[in-house]
Image 1 (cartoon, rainbow, N blue to C red):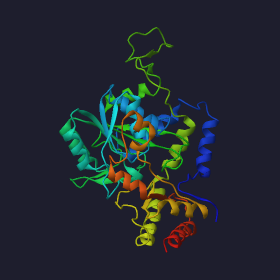
Image 2: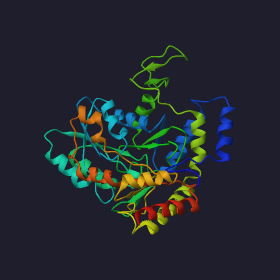
Image 3: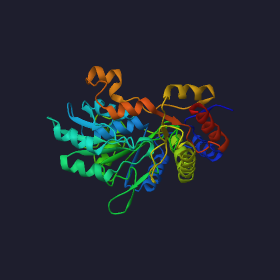
Image 4: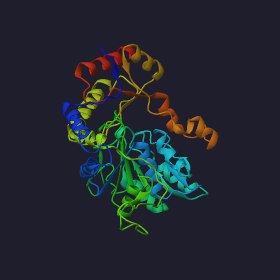
Length: 381
């Protein structure tokens, strides 16, 4: 059996053809494909505005900047996420604190959020919930908490393109549509639903935030005549904010547009793979992946009794499962600089002791998945 990774991109001939068209065009970057990708993506998510950027981390950084995070301000997020979800606050000079996870779905716990906010001597300014593995956070509940305590909300939907939850009014709310958040962010890393090599997107329904994001992703520089404080001629531009070069290229945008055309088809394949894992592993492992009808299944995460040895057993059989994630509060940097420590978030730490992400990608074949399942069953006997 050939190596089976936990995640994998699929590049079609159509993807290649569209990229070649851009390579032969007038623009490799800062051209028309960027706006086209943004418009199509915004329509797919169901949001007014989308801003394409260099990667998911850049999206998080600019999202935090758009919320005007200031030095020393406190922001709440989950320990079970990639470090960038928390780091983006530190980039802006803010402070990060964590609320433990819900043991049922592994996302940030509403009860722990409330407890943290109620008992904190200092005021928080914002919250960054994460749709871990593609399991949708109920953003309506997050928004209710945020309004109660005067917080802004950034939804980290990097795992959840195509995911959704149903709100209290029975309305299907797509992850990242900003119906209950100020902004949301997505990633287009190769193992994500839409692959552009690197790349990310920020979504919002707020025009003021949208315009600020456009400025921040390009060094804080504008040539927009309606924004200039003066105008010396057609060449003139102004740097009005301290921004960054976080632009996406037209090459990547063309790939993203083509990938997006297959997004629903590939999401259906992910859900089919998940259903098979559910059925075959339900009584084999400690726990199968949490189920939600709107789950986007970027990852399929099981809980294993003996995670390390199962991980090694799978690798010996050319199955490259992965662990998502080491709790952020246990990272040496956070322990040294934010005084976090083992024992602070028991649900997150217990989750980490057992979690394992199995191969999950649209081109995973039936025979490959069968091999993964049988290898796990043989280990668990």
